[in-house]
Amino acid sequence: MTDLLFLAHRAPTAPDRGDRIRSYHVLRHLAARARVHVVAFDEGEAPRPALDLASWTVIPRTKTRVRAVAEALATGRPVSLTAFADPRLTAALAALPPVDATYVFSGQMAQHVPVGATTIMDFVDLDSAKFLQQAEAAHGPIRWLLAREAKLLARFERDIASRAGSTLFISDAEAALFRSTGGQGHIGALGNGIDARHFDRGDVVPVPSKRPLIVFTGQMDYQPNVDAVTWFADHVLPRLAADFAIVGRAPTAAVRALGRRENIVVTGEVPDTRPWLAAASVCVAPLRLARGVQNKVLEAMAMGCPVVATPQAAEGIDHGGTVRVAEPRDFAAACAALLAYPGTLGVEARARVLSHYDWAARLAPLDDLLGIVRTLAA
Image (tube, rainbow, N blue to C red; front, side, top):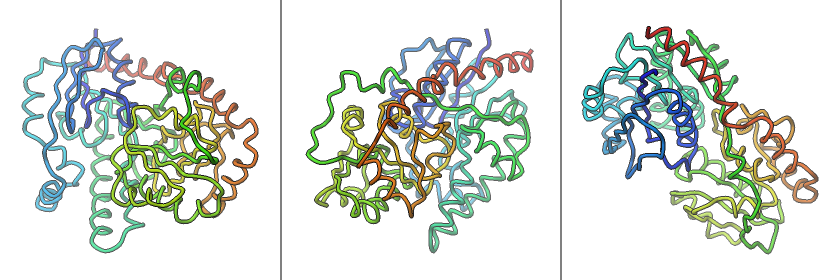
């Protein structure tokens, strides 16, 4: 059996946010086929998942963003790397037994892989493109810092991919974008799935709502999500006869302020998003700054909820027309049309998830990659 090291920037346990959902399911798939040693960072407690793992090491993240920025400016490195440079993790890796290969989850962790090691590099999203997109929307010193991050990180991503045994992105669109910016090597896509048995209306009791309810779910200290709900509340919701629920942990002050408006609810962290999705007349993904596959869209589709998404939020999802894709200028009209007549869009969306987004099918390409790893390591 192959011995694998699984490196992650956030511990792959409690799959309750976008990156953890993917990393947990990838880890579960790999653990059934190899002896896996997990080394990861985490912000707090990270219980070991109920998987057959060779070892489990989690390093608490204590470095502040201010310190990471200072280190990056002093050394000429990207902030994304200095934020995850930690001698404690280096020591933890040195204490491990030899492994045949390393699965690196997210680009920040690639700095910890020795040159020449057999590596499966899962970038998930093209982070350099994300920072470039954010830079174009920013102003002042923040714009300069984001543009710097995009430039330095792009150079690092290309270097890592040129040396990796295989490089993965969350969608064909992300992989194609990487190639178009000079990325070389064995580049492919490994799409996300969805646990459709969990995200099923079934016996879920919807939250009560007196008026039609529009729902957005997500991590609410993540800037693209903050931008999305703020824009929707300011420019779209006033044109609709509906309430708006922003469902997700860690809302920023700007998001909490939206909750003071008469027809907006900001929930903060909830134990289960399904009652909100079940109550939704429409789920929205009005992201203007987005990369990769949006799990929030897949979850809403699985719950049989009609979805309106911007092209950025729908990119990478093989929805087959079961998501209403609307540019910002058309977003209010698309929402109003579904509020008036949802038709069978939600039913069709769930059927699409069942036929195209089973996790086992989505992760099947990893079996071929493990075969390549065994050959390279032999």
